Length: 351
Ligand code: NAI
Ligand code: MG
Image (cartoon, rainbow, N blue to C red; front, side, top):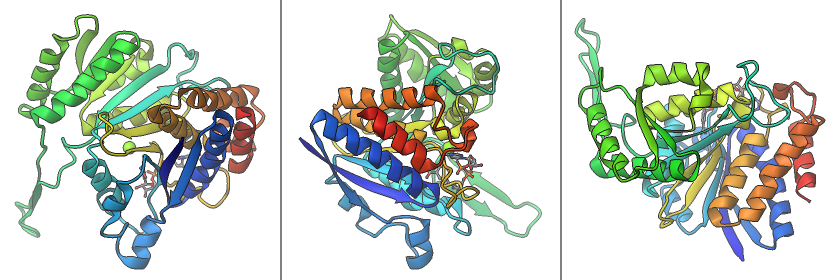
């Protein structure tokens, strides 16, 4: 069958890595007998600086007919970061109820961890981040500009439906892996939303007696991730906590160039969106040296989500084969290969 994919390469290296990922995914589609019908949108900070908006007014509506969305990264020097986030990413995530941000991280062959002597078996975890509410909210404001008592107020929104569905998703996932789940909290300092989160976590945990459930304060959990990553398998956290922990998890494995993510609408009523965790990397944009692996692995997650399991495995297998051989490594991996060189090597390994 044919899948309709909306591609939003975005800015900077987003464009470079999406080109390589498409190369790899098209190869997998040809080999496994399905079609990927790509439609490209130029929505980006670059568009914003030309037209004043990240995407057209009916942008979300136009995306709604696709089977999935494949996003590179947005961000451009001179355009404030909140513009790209609130002008594109957050509206899409919320309109399509992409309430799960799934970020698997593992140490891939041929790469090394900044934590010395850690093996691939010890560095393999999934961060489940709440993606639709929580700390990332527009509620609040600034008051008393110029006065000594000036202050800013930022409110968080945690709903029972929102908290319960993300925690349930994480328990299901933990049950399909090692049967261990840790919830990030901070109920000692944040005394309204976090106790609410903890309470719902405990309620849902009762439905999953086969999963060892634990809660841990975010600060201690960050330390544990560095000191004892082997004790962590699936982590569930609020929008902010999950965001921070997933970058940390990516950093202790192969780095940002290796970490994919999925913004999922689990019921499948709306399209899900797949992207690399990293941004547009203006410091290396245009040089052709960005590592395309994160974007390619985001493509494997997309194939998995579309139900093309064999093709998804072929793509992640090809990434592992090429990284293990070590010949086509980009500079962040200690090599001299270009983005296109690594992308082509992975595409060829797919078959
Ligand atoms: P970044 O992820 O773009 O870059 C951080 C560092 O990692 C840089 O030194 C960069 O060169 C390196 N890096 C990132 N991806 C790499 C890759 N694939 N290969 C090799 N090296 C890589 O984060 P930064 O610098 O904080 O943000 C840059 C822009 O990206 C900002 O405008 C930010 O708003 C945007 N951004 C967009 C995201 C998205 O579209 N979802 C996510 C994160 C940031
Ligand atoms: Mg982030």
